[in-house]
Length: 175
Length: 436
Image 1 (cartoon, each protein chain N blue to C red):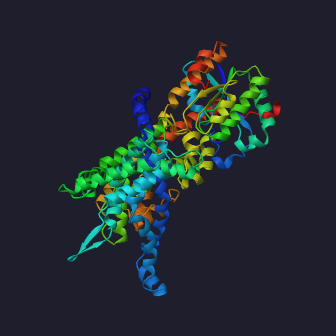
Image 2 (image 1 turned 90 degrees about the vertical axis):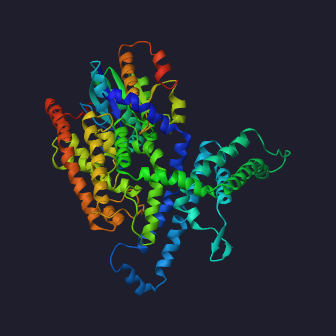
Image 3 (image 1 turned 30 degrees about the horizontal axis):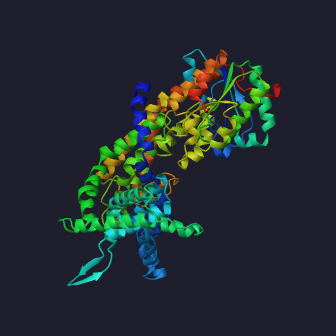
């Protein structure tokens, strides 16, 4: 199972809020917090073939470009599934995640999962929960991250095998 | 192992984090923290730890100058019990779904009802309130009053024990009448409490709470095992992605707060500083650069590590790290759910607590003066300001270097793993988005 993870500059390990102008980029390995997800993925023979990153302000200013580039590159690299996040309770990154996921759904055949926290994101989740798979994760520093990552991996498996995800959505996603 | 620890820890952390009383205590103290930080500066300027400081400014500004500054610092430090009651009742009222300002108002009145209002001076009895009752010694009393008064107020509101006003009465007026009966219940209850205690050997609730609760808890909290447990748990929880201090503070913050205020009062009165394990001790002498003492980790990453990702993160995170911001490294390295880094991340703050605790107990470094510095104050400076001695800075420097030595083998392990990954992908690892 080949997974691509999309992160903002903080989660990719490229600095703090002051680096929100980081342009889009990517590496063919698990960067920053994707490293934690990779450990869980490896247990089920999954691997992260690339991490795409983009600063949140850069994304806001160049949303069309970033959406198109990320979607085309994920298809080119033949990803089985794309994971965006965990975005925790960072509202800018969460918004970026939902918008990117929507673009992926509309323009590619690659399944996509967003992982975000409800805190500071209530309106956003209400807007996107019907059309997207938004996996529940705790807020930054909240309890239950480890099990949330396991759910995310389970979601990746189901999405890759193109299995029915209704029960998964009911149990582990905002629905 | 990690899963087992998580299974045991998670339910406890979740319960503590969600407990409305503990959350309100933590949030309530946070409400008054800005006031404490600002007035701390006035206290520090009035008592700056340099020989001849007082004499110099007396020569320039006259003998009254220190009184100007202590007027400001006293405005908070002599009333921390009352202010704590205000903050906690506000937070608790808000968390319980009440109008927070109303909750605060009844709590303050309840506090004043229980406060002795006469004072014997020589043979005369005069009407006066001693700040003794309103300051640090009244903090636990303030906590209890805040919780009980708000709970009583809510009890009455929930049962709709309110006076209904006819339609057309302006909302401000009807809201005021809504508060009438619940306020009456609270006031009457505290009226009775005051009478009951006046009939006992304690005479006041203040004496009762201070003797039976505040003093014993203070003694338990002001110990090395208590501080060690605090920092061990705070760091351990971070490794599971949980903001450890928000959980541990909900238990320890009232105790550390009282201990800090005691030292501050002694500092203000030029008396020996009584306690070692204060909030500034925890903030300034146990972790450097944020939870896990990650400033030491950043220094190793910058100086010794070779992999691109570790070095790059080190470069980006060092400046925020000096000022105690370690979000980039917690999530970016990452520390969260990373078993290799978890070991030093837990060991170093615990070891620092042990060393600083012993060194201060032995008197090699003075106790912290209780001045609450902004948490972004860099180490070395904070060590000096909080103890008034260069030995405080030396202790910090020693512990930062010790942290470097302990972090070294662990981050090197991670660095080597990243180097192998980078070498394995012998071609350029960067993804070229111009190709699409």
